[in-house]
Image 1 (cartoon, one colour):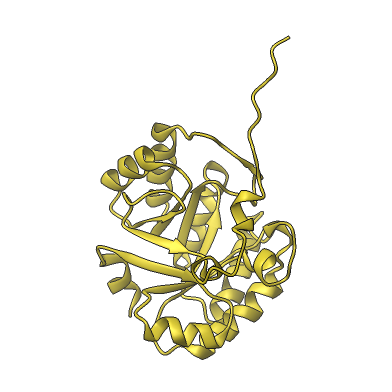
Image 2 (cartoon, rainbow, N blue to C red; image 1 turned 30 degrees about the horizontal axis):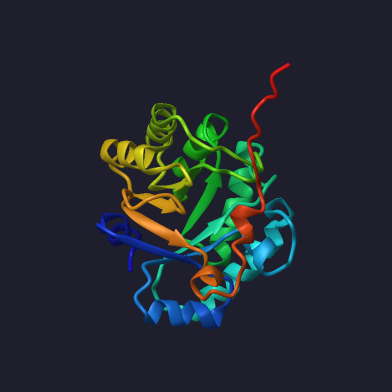
Length: 225
């Protein structure tokens, strides 16, 4: 499936994948795209945070996934610390593209607008990611401001991103953003109001403890004095 066909689909199904065998199996079973996520640090390496995922890890697993598929698009995460400047972001994004990625994914909002624009102006496909962003904060918000998220999503779209992950943002925010964007919105543990959904393979196979999200602490309320 081409990138153009992917972003025009009404319902997009994306699954994380880290190896060649599962990549081929997922393609045969009509998955629309594969995500080599920084979640591999937790699920594959046994780390306690996605921040411990290295660029070399994502490159290695992207190469493995690429060898297992014929035409399915591959999205690769840009790990923590790999896009701190526009120049660094382009250099590392190209490494992921060379490894087999068709799209790179970046977490964040206002701080990455210029980086997204820089990459897209260099003909690199970018997927945004807002809401719960563990590379930035490991505190899981109980509720997100839908209007603020919409403003961020629209800015990311304006910078040239071809799709955006809405991570645990909630039904109201998902609905509002999806109705006001022209690019696909992809839900991660959020709601059915998005254009598509991304799931972690090991969760679907029921061989994980959902540690990727539920290990994070919820924001604590301030104690009254």
